[in-house]
Image (cartoon, rainbow, N blue to C red; front, side, top):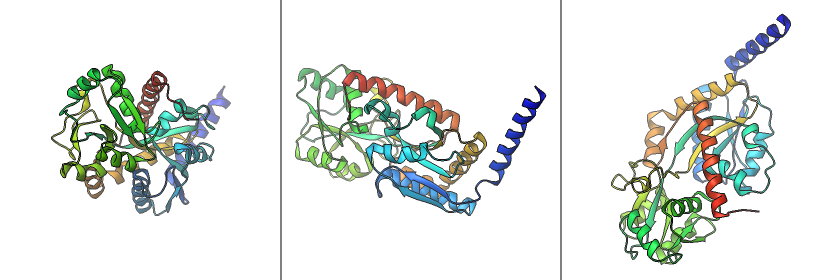
Length: 317
């Protein structure tokens, strides 16, 4: 018995020593989406701050495909030593329910490090739609079942799922029209092909200010500084919160000491005034929780979206 206790204590000491010296070489941060998007931008901010703090280069590697699955799979099967990380997002939590089979076990093969931001969408309508609030949109949909069409950036995206959960919570039937990306869906809304959609605040804000779109709500649990006069959907549908989020994860068996060290340094970098100011300006809510808090949040997201996806019968093959 003493021998086993001594071995366990030795392993803990080795893990603590490794965490104190970590990192001693370059770190690879996989962004499982194409360059230039929001995930890529957030990844490069992480890389810059960690490189500055540790003097070890953190390289962002874009591995797009499969709705984040390809890049995530690379990290899920990498050595659990803290030198390979992945940007996680809402798509990481929805993939197990949307896809028939994943090449990894999400909860077993990924270790949550930190949630960086929550990024509420704006519920925007075409100016011709006779609604000024979520309550009025629901009333119109109830009076005209399946006649009110909403757009999204594609099947299974956060903008699609946001529309589905709104309809489910409100008990109404609306028609979903998927497009090949966020930009085409916004163009379709402006032309009147669809009546409303959930859109990222950054690209829709200039259109809202110009009067080409009207924002009647935001998808987060509270108001956002980017649209201070616009109430959350939750004011009408209690508990509604479908804001896309972004975080960082490591391979599943990464030592706790290294997870904590990564968490603390990333949180320090994202707390810098210049970073926070930029994030808020671009419509993000800064989160920066602990690994345990992020793990609980992530599991809750998987459970929430699994129910929505099953009820709506959504599948991507």
